[in-house]
Image (cartoon, rainbow, N blue to C red; front, side, top):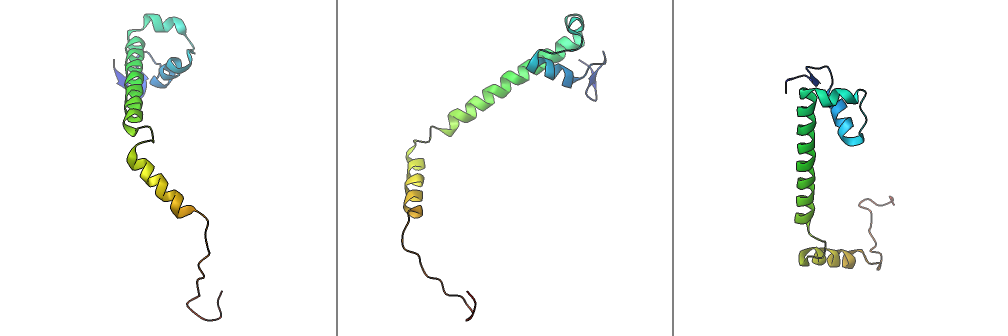
Length: 98
């Protein structure tokens, strides 16, 4: 696949192919079945989408469920710190200011 800028040798762009992968819409669908450049571009974009999904899934799995002990400890401390209580009076540094 030879790409200059974002256009393939056949004149179509990677952006057009990306839209096709996402939506199935393409101005000349017959061209896609005949053009080796577009076929290679579509194959690459599909592989990229699969790899992106795998990375997202790995990040989600690594993040945990939020029920880990350390996360629960943080949430418990936040509950203690944020509970309503007495106001602490703060005096201004200079008299006459509020």
